[in-house]
Length: 191
Length: 199
Image 1 (cartoon, each protein chain N blue to C red):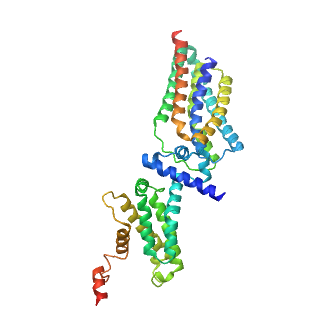
Image 2: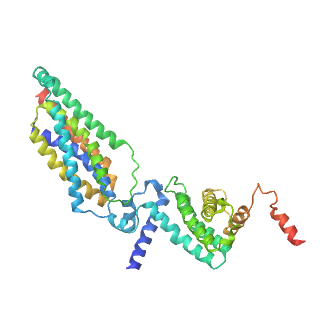
Image 3: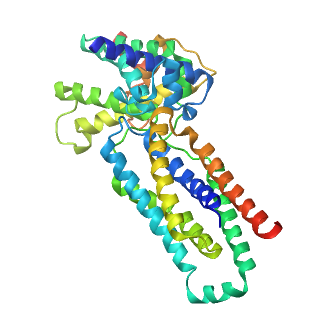
């Protein structure tokens, strides 16, 4: 799996984080750097735990054994997983949410819950990465950097512009993942 | 400093009133409100918690403060007429916001502010209530009942597009409805009351 594909999928996953952070930012009267760092650490931790956890699932001996004979099959499965994640992001973008903009302090319990929920697609992406034989360190590093950037961007975007960018962000995220998946299909099946 | 704060609050309030004319209140976002007011988005939270807080403030500063002040002079009927008159001047705005339902509704806000006022009056003038003994007639309960009644009366008038009474007619109607009880057989009808006083 190429680095571009890994980075694109990491960006796609992080747009989900960005979307959630715009809502968080939209409720803030002021941005405190310490709390912003705290949120970035929480999201990075859960994204890494989830993607690595998913990756490790793919290392289970039964999958490893089967992978030797069914490489094409696992690649197809990976692309199906990535397309499903993209579809999920599109569904979230389409779903009309009623968000009540009200000033509130950062609630770290809520942030942790949100980080766990948002990292579910990272878990499935981790399985996909594992089946594709991607380098887990490259995956983790890519996701770490992109998540930090998108947490900060998301908070500032929500703070300045409100949460209205959420659907657009989810669509862009889905587009990144779809593009990476199409690239995988072209690379592994056509070329 | 206080003047600048008030001015900004007025700007935000006017912005909400203008926007509500063209879109449902539910669709209003803080960004739209601040863009209309010519402010940056983060400035909103320096003055208000959310858009419902703006409605609360409009109701309090543009209507109720003057009404309560008038009531304190002793002219409570005049205060009631003033209430209907002030809300009537912005009827279209209040018609849009009265359509919001749920815990952030203007009806709830109006009821809450009226209840505080009623409670204050009953605590200052305990003679307004019958002698102690009936636990249902505690000032807080009476204030809750009275404020709910008046808030509901106002809501029905604002939302009724077929009716356009004057503030005086509204005052007369509310004053008639308030003491009237179907269940009090001894309660005379208003015309009977007039006959008795004529005799």
